[in-house]
Length: 202
Image (cartoon, rainbow, N blue to C red; front, side):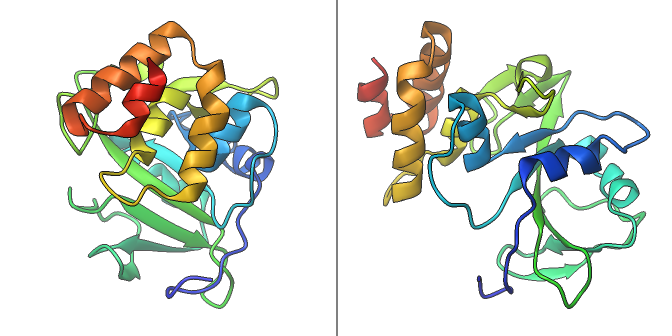
């Protein structure tokens, strides 16, 4: 339960079933804590929601995939409003909440991120970049999920790091290869140079 209503999140396989219906085959990635679990290969903790990352330029596919759903934009953050089909969301809107009906629980949160010349870049600092082609990892079932080093970058907070994020970091850390560690160290050195994860990554 949040102040915006109860959640009953979809499972990753249900998200994959929905997104595999899209006509345009735009890229998408399971994100958040589930992305870390898919990377490590087993359940780590409970989840209050489920996140999917989309490129901002592909936002229109949400209404195609979730036709008939109640789809609302977090605009401004912390408040929701209806997002009608055909409206291009402004740059300050990054999150979309989705449920099957206005009286039902929330089932899915979609995050929008920006690209430039086929490169994803962080809204925290555009110097943190990655080719879009490098964002994805894939499970044996074919479900795309966000590369763990990028998901951990999202999770790193300047203060009051959440316990659930520490669980995710501790589980992923031994499995990160040298390239993944180096990228995350470099990204944190730009945005959070004093973050304690940088020491653990070395």
